Length: 229
Length: 193
Image (cartoon, rainbow over all chains, first blue to last red; front, top):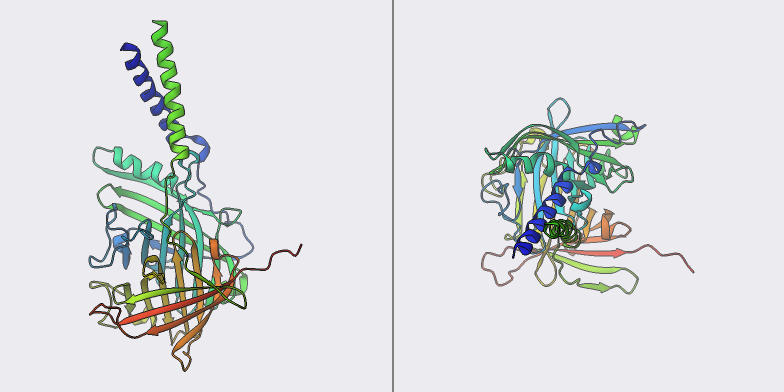
């Protein structure tokens, strides 16, 4: 009997050690400096509040931490879309002036591998900037560092919340340098392609309601003629 | 005592390997897939029909200055920012009426860089189709468009998208009709051996 108990204790200790190794794995750090910080292309920055309640509309399966908004929006409960979120928000320029809207579709990726520090999401931004045109951004995002540094500490906290400073690039592909793929739609962006990077800056998170203070940033590298028009 | 210690070490080893195997082999995300309903076209390409039932598949209608915005409580920006741009969000179904994705449709007739109508169709397990539509519908009531770009399964494809509003009900008293999107997509030719 004592051997069985010892074996069970050993298995639990082993599993805990593995999970601790997974959580504190120093080899899966995410970058906080944009891979398009140095580029010949003209860079355009758009910022947005990443708190769903600050947006125009947010919906998901209706059973996640972050609740759909406004109250009567349809929920994505069907099997094919249950792992997806849709979010509509105003986009601002770097001075905080509204310059357009963005619609973001996000779906948890089957390529997620927690053992390698990959909590992946496939996301699409459909952006309209009045007076400039439309853009589609395709990106794979990695939320592992966000889970590790913000969400899990909030759950461990006795107050069920987290406060601090978190600033990371979430975009991890599909570009070889970890950039998203930008396709120009109409207007000044018609027929253009470029790269983009999304980052998150979080200051507060609540287990009950999700992000409390968080801003996002979309940095887009466009051919010079498009960005300067 | 040594026997107990060896058992503990073996247990720890088993725990590490077991937890590792569990995390490695258990898929963290397993997306649901509906069976593909594709017609092969005689001149090349595949035709897929997507359907949006109105009003039940409509998630958002955002139009500045309109009292008919959906959903109730939507605080849509004013005309000074977005002009007459109308944004719509829908759930998208296949021909069997099963939801397979979500879509956004943006349209503006007074945008200063040129009027536009475009769709972004997002299928979680497959990828996204980004299509530009012609501004004027045909005399037969449909609107043609071109695939501007695609992601994942649609990345290498070219083709067309046809949008058509179909009046009539589908047995639902509240039905206002449906939007059908016919996507004819062609894969690039491979290397000739």
